[in-house]
Length: 76
Length: 76
Image (tube, rainbow over all chains, first blue to last red; front, top):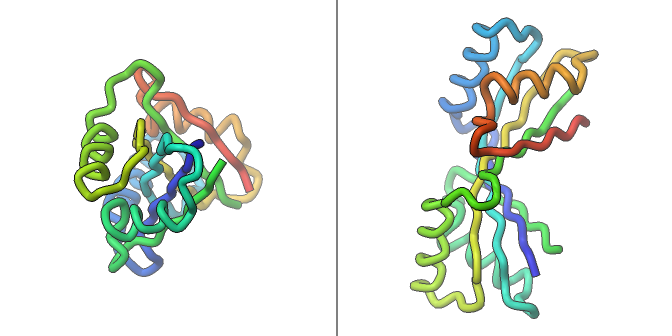
């Protein structure tokens, strides 16, 4: 089975990487880009029967810094 | 309007970051993790009327290195 984890900076946390992308898009002539947030996506190949709770534990312990980042788990 | 861009390394391209995560998960006692791929997710706040072709152009020119990365655009 597969799990996809999205990790994004929480709202209000400064995202310099996203700001850099926004400036670069403007410099390349793309107009109307008012905000950019950049995060991580992690695709996990898991043994069958792994529960969503297990994946949440992976996020809490390693994949996300829950002080400044939020995460979302999609199992498929 | 919003667009979400997923950028992942193509299959066959070595992903050292993903490998590091896989090892770390094993070291933390999570078993059955057979593969990890890490990519980027970029959320764009765009002016209304921006077309998917515009977002694809942003990906081709800046957001993805299409030699080694593939991207997917979701408009919402």
